[in-house]
Image (cartoon, helix red, strand yellow):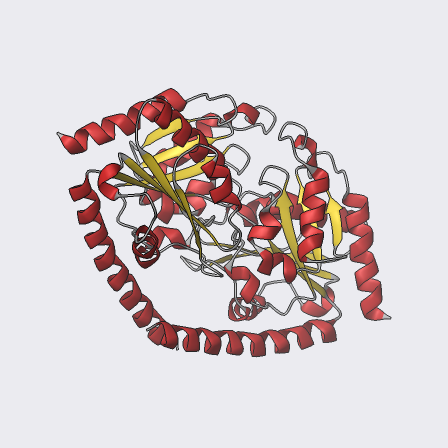
Length: 225
Length: 225
């Protein structure tokens, strides 16, 4: 039975990869930079994304977000407060987003055209394991890690960090209360993914957001040049 | 392909349930109380378990632990500091433990006999989704949630909380720094699983541990009566 499952899983991933490739071509053609945000539940993806959407809008950028959860549309409602168009994807028991869900939710999204966007953010289901295997057609995969989670997460979930283009440390405002060992966390991230860009942020105080926004703009500029 | 996957998944779960049932019979016959600890990565399962093992040993109980992780034996090494026998299960990419892994790691565990134990703790892989579907033969499933994760986790991951026998809130020592809304968290847990026993704990200060240990002893007494 294990062999059959492995074969089926490979088939599903292959099909997903093909669809993701075609999505990526569409994103490139439309000139929209797509990011896939992955972390454990409770890392603060939604708070970080809410702040990112608000800050980018304040700079005149056109942004939108797809947000994945097993159940509830709490996150979409929170993110909509930023003023950006947001669409919830409920996976009903599936522990990750896949390319097909993205394609489906891009279709018929009222008032949103890919070509009219500068950035599209995809907030994945809170899970450090399965989302790593599913390409969503994104240009940039972002692994988030909060100061409360333990500095060894990159070593324990190497696939995610190894497939990420950028790492964001969240909740820096409570780093001291959590006795967060910054040097150790940075060392562990770098051990799994040497040279990866790391942002140390707080959605509460705004710390680190300037660097993060500059990175986003730099990545967009790279695309259009 | 989806139908085939669903059928295969049902087959796997059915096989797992059968093995779990036989494990549960063995556990009951041996007179050992088995607990399955499930939470997000970074909730503090290992710190909580380390303290539980140490405190139970100090009271004269015979305890052991199996600990699941995708990679590394960091957690087994941390838990071994309690003096209890601990065995690491590396799942190498699988996002949950299953009954077969438990059976395999109980076999040939040097110096450990089920009949010689009062408690066996199983620390699952950090994941709020898939571990909910896999019965490990445990008597008590414990869902852990830290004050840093957001009070809406029970609503967003209902299957785990709905299948749990007890809920443990961890890191209460930093509740204030995280602006943890205690009433809301308790209400959300109770909405998904009315009347579930809830423990508010801190592995750092020891808060709530007395209640938790009393619960464990009460559950053991119930079994042998």
